Amino acid sequence: MEKTLQEIENEVVDEFSMFDEWLDKYEYLIELGKSLKDYPESDKIDEKLIKGCQSRVWLDYKVADGKIFFNADSDAIITKGIISLLIRIYSGRTPQEILSSDFSVVDRIGLKENLSPTRAGGLASMIEKIREVAAENI
Image (cartoon, rainbow, N blue to C red; front, top):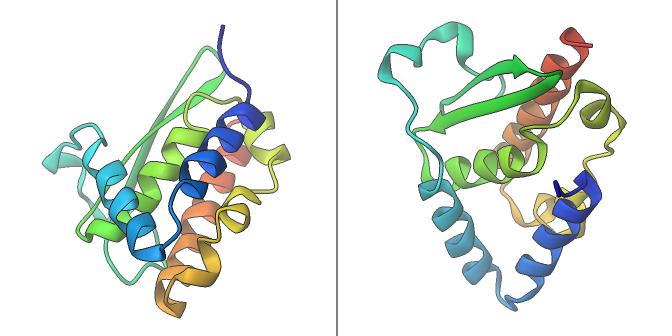
């Protein structure tokens, strides 16, 4: 049976709580980024860039059976890990599920306060873009 959004968020919180040091959490984020499926070079176009990120982050999606499936890539390893984490949580969800999420998982794992201001701004832009895609596909 498919896991609920809440169950996946709780899994992520549990995984991050296994690490005491933020350096280890960054390493884990980098590993998550490596798990992203290949993003076609032909899709690395300006229309798919998320505005507001210091590094380049491309986000693409398709809608199938009323659910949104995201794919992304970034030219920075930590950023790639952050977007892969968001994709893990929100890809395959309905627009309503995404829009009803408060995205507090990023606070619960301590991500926002452990990022540089520019990366935190990029994280906010990624969340905003995911919400925007959900709102456009209701």
